[in-house]
Length: 275
Length: 347
Ligand SMILES: Cc1cc2nc3c(=O)[nH]c(=O)nc-3n(C[C@H](O)[C@H](O)[C@H](O)COP(=O)(O)OP(=O)(O)OC[C@H]3O[C@@H](n4cnc5c(N)ncnc54)[C@H](O)[C@@H]3O)c2cc1C
Ligand code: SF4
Ligand code: SF4
Image 1: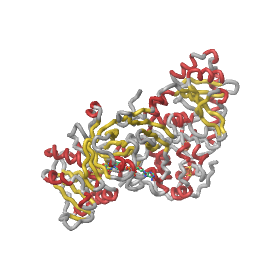
Image 2: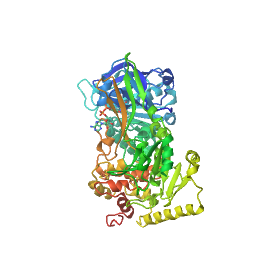
Image 3: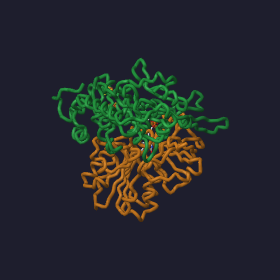
Image 4: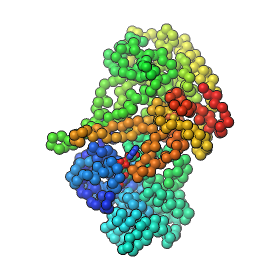
């Protein structure tokens, strides 16, 4: 019988970490050793995760590409599948398909300045890229991370920022600041106030709510960043991950298979405006 | 022909067009004289449903007594047995070739491809077009060159049978006693009939669709779309009857014991609001024109990049079933001419 790419491979939840009130990071180990060893991903790719009895949904891989035994996803509780996942405990069995999609353009951005912009849970697919950059720090020039969350409590990977700051520039902002928040407040675009485009050798990668990506993209275009250097990861309703179910099609392209990462020059002529 | 079908049934499951209350429909047949090879135009639903059923169980899962999770792949069922589908019209044969391209490539959809490999296609050319047929304009009929294992043509007192594949040849090889060598005249007669059908369809005087994609790209923001989408009920009938529409959603159904359940896929429609809804509540095609356009732009614009051709095969089913009487040909004509001033000459 032929290989069936719709069948989830069984995996075990190794660890669960509370990120925020409604967001958790799940460390996952694929049970079958052969499958586990052939599970290689590029930062920016995603898996289809099955919570048996609830269904399947796409989640970005968020662990470092250098981690081999396990991989992680960071999940915000939304509806059916994510609620089901939040009921599970360490040791419980889930299903995994993938990795799917086209990740961040690592080869292209090597040797350049990089501006990374994340909003909310949108930091999840950027984290493996950041960790790759840090491990291969000499291959990249100036690297800046702008991250925005709703409130200080909604910031994910809190414990990592201090580590990251040793290698790259990190600026945080929150939409709604609280008393003891000493940092920036306002949408991510406020962080652009002190940001200047110093050369053409800069790429930007972003992931966040559609509205954030819309404004950040406009901002970068107005600063004359080249459209083919503005990358983002799109979220769409997707079921199969392979370009069959048709749901993620945007402007004639399958976001699951041809994306989720696109650059602005690829999408600017889409009939449907994707960002 | 009944003798041939009878013999096929000894070795294969037979699918063929049969008369039902709702019209002619492809069904599994157990008595070969139920097969209606004289049906006009197309069946209610295209043969797609035998390769990509409206609801398909993909796999079941179950926790066994020891608490281990097991998955039972329904693909195993799909792989069993061989089928022959008879009486597939050229437009529908062409639609299977479209689906073949969609369901293969970087990934292969095993549920679809397994059924395709399990099933011989015995085509049937038309002796007359039906009211809404327009295959000629999209190059999918009335003649057909590939996509069949055998191709039947009704020449009145006999069928001309063209062999299209090795598998088709085997079907005839073991039944040579009921076949005669075709004469040149028979082939000419078929050509004559097909030409007649083609001329009949040409009378519709439709514009050339060769550059329709470019025109559509220019008219993406045209008012035309507001007018049509206001009429559209977003019922999805046009998707569900279309031989090349194949979008689906995936859903899980746990059993009451909560220890087992099934995953299945179900036909979906780009006209539905839920189609592009993500968990945050955002809907990417919220307004009606954007959804109305998606079907048309996928068929006539996006498909060219995706599979190298448009993906409408001119069967006319969507025209026939639309409760709002929206005729895709009116839409396209209007797009080509550009403006509401054109009266719809197409029947
Ligand atoms: C490439 C990609 C990467 C992603 N990465 C992450 C990540 O790293 N972390 C994260 O938290 N999230 C991520 N998401 C989003 C995540 O997939 C969703 O949050 C998840 O699908 C929610 O599933 P749910 O079943 O919990 O939510 P639900 O809202 O129950 O289900 C969502 C799905 O069901 C459908 N649906 C729900 N309600 C209805 C209704 N009433 N009518 C019709 N349809 C309905 C929606 O169309 C949607 O497809 C990603 C999405 C994509 C596309
Ligand atoms: S069948 Fe007609 S009314 Fe229904 S969705 Fe299609 S175009 Fe709209
Ligand atoms: S779009 Fe309409 S005419 Fe064209 S193949 Fe589909 S159902 Fe037939």
